[in-house]
Each structure stands twice: as C-alpha cells, then as structure tokens.
Image (cartoon, rainbow, N blue to C red):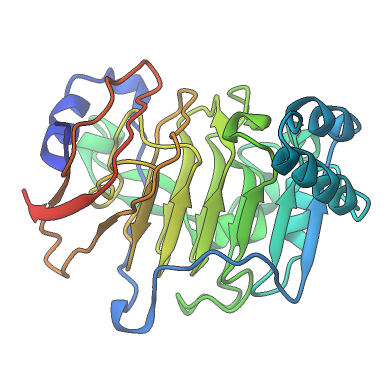
Length: 322
C-alpha cells in the first residue's frame, strides 16, 4: 500500500540542493464554492486539432490489430484531416472558453515558444519583491519574482505552453476557462511534450479554471513539468504526474493513481523528470480548507511497485487528514 503525504514531500525537499529552489509569487486560493472538478467531454463547440507531419504514420502504427483498434484508427485519421496547428501553444492562443484541443500522436517541442527570452524585456516592470535574507541573501532586500502580469503579457518567457485565464487581474478566469487538452494516441506515450530543459515549466495553467489535461506525457522542464496555479477546479488524467513533489506558496495536492483532481487549487507542481501515469478506473480527489491543512490520499488497494517514473495503479482511493 502506497501513501503519498505532503509532509513526506516537504521533508524530501529539505534535502534537495538549493540550486533547485526558486521563489514564487504569492498565491491566493480561489473561492471553492463557485468551482468544480471538470468532467471529460467527447466533443465541444470549438474543437482545435494539433498534429505533426508524421502523425498519420504514428496512428497507423499504433492503432492496429483488433477490429476495435481499426475503428479507432479510422476515427483518428478522420479527425486528423481537421488539423490546422503544428504547435500546441498556437491552438491554445486560438482557444475560447470550453474549447477541446486534440493533440495527435507526435513529439511536440514547441519551437516558437522557445524563441521567447527569459527574462523578457517586454515585461521588465512586472516583478514583485518577496521575502528577506532567506530568498535574497545577506542584503535582506527580498527576491524579485515574476508576478501574474508577467505571465499574462509574456506567457512563453518561462513556459513552453501557457494557459492563462485572467485577462483583467481580478483573479477570476474569463478567458481560456474549461479548456480540455487531450492526447489522441492509443497510449499516453504516443503524445510527448518535451521541454528539453529550455523553460522553467513545460505546461502552465494559471487562473485557468476547469483545465483538463488527459492522455499525454510531459518531460524535461527546467523545474516543473506541469504547473497549475490559482485555478478553481482542474483534472489531470492519464498524463504526467508528480515524481518530485515541491511547494510554492502552499503544499501541492496529493496524487494517487491515474487522476489528480482538485478544487480549489493552490500550486500543483508535478516534477521535472519524465512521468507517465497508468490507466485506472478511479480518481484521486482532494480538498483543502482555507487553513491549508495538509491532506493525505491513500490507495484502498495494493499498488504496483513504483518505477523510476513513479508509476502507480489503483482501483479506488480515500482521503484522510495527514
């Protein structure tokens, strides 16, 4: 039986070299009474399809064998004809609230995003100063951190893919809300988003209420593979998962099995090594009060032995206080 606790994660962080740490902006809890964990949608009013030149070849190579797989192959090839984007960020930029972004099999390095400098001179004034000697050293003047306006104005300075939901600074999502980003491969490894350590975060969802990430693999960020911050309701299913827990202004959510669901959210920060979560039937859910009491999610069944990628499979979960 595997127990994932925030307390243990924090203890492990104490032994991480200081070079891996970095200050974060002050985060605020959304109003949990107004949010909800998003549900899977098979269709949407706006469907955007992202693909690579070899997506058709990859689809034919993986969806083969049984009659069911052959039917799925025909469906994927039909969906592929609607591809209009080569990069995920380009599709995100065109997405309205409630959009479904389908990502066809392939390797996504998001080259246009990589060309954005960090720090970005366009956002030179969008920093806050936080902390004291612990963050800044003997000067005691605090550390400069990129604030929300930095992320909104220069979304790809620190992030390979940025889903930024608040356009007017009121901490409420009014754009890019309820986005579903879904890999369309047979397995989660069929869609690979690779940061190659060029950006601090590979996927960032910031004030992007209702974000749903499904069925893909994320690897090689400079710090966080997936960073979900100040977001009122999110779900990660059959996608990258925490292999190195960390904290920003408050603890990361507990994670067990194939799904992480959270409402409301403080920072959710799956780690920077390649991570894949096996399919399972249950969701690992959690909630936190305004007093930030840590919670523990424990599997009710025996889990498979963990690998270097932190694989865990469960069939049911329970939540208890740490």
